[in-house]
Length: 89
Length: 86
Length: 178
Image (cartoon, rainbow over all chains, first blue to last red):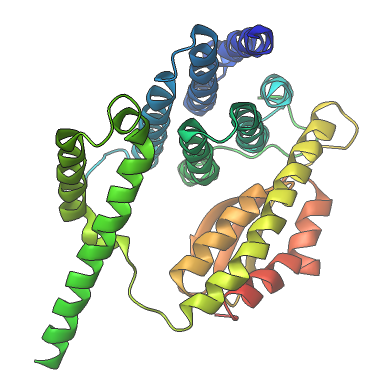
């Protein structure tokens, strides 16, 4: 009963590999930030799939924590790239 | 999800790539997690999965908007039709 | 004197409501370890109460917004708008797929326009909706005049935002044209 989850997991892993091309080659800083955000998003779904394959439902909590941390990280990097400093004091 | 990544490779400019990934990734993730919710039935794990997808529905477009505003204010050039690919 | 009493009342109410919501969240997230192995273990529930108390005292000031007028009516109109929003997300993905494979064209431009919305919540909802509609992404919002700077990917979505104005009417209808 784990064959659909295995197929989706392998597809998402291949997608992460394709996206790392943009992370290496993209001219400039901002293209690489997009690639990092996309890889973070794919990693959340990949964690849930691995949780189903190994049959340990605790992986969903890890996925929730990683989603929150990746979102905060993206916003902090965007704020730093916009202003040149993080805290104006 | 696959469409979003192919768009990431194929589009000619930063702003258009942000269009593709921001929208496709949000919907793809919501659909995959919704499929997992239907597979489970009606236990407590369904509520946890629903929270992950609801959080990403709110947070995905917000991150897209933050990145776009940072790039526009810093002065990244916008691609008009007929320019070179960047 | 009257303002202080009103504020203290509002503070107590918001602490109570925030604590209830946080405790319900904790129950939903970890109830299956509390109830299934051995029912009603008191130490685990005590841990949940302490965690909910800590989070409440850190965040109670910003969790409950100050009472606007007719909150229930706005909430009642918000839910069909949410359903329309999910349908637009689906259309947006089909649109991006068509542009990636070359069926429609890619011709980006930047446009600016004004709206009549002024309150915080309405501005944020409209900006999120623009990002989720096919073909447009919000860049900047000016809250004093309601001026939005938007990057559109072709002429058709740009027109549907400035000329037709379907979304401004919908959001104005939900928040009663604030």
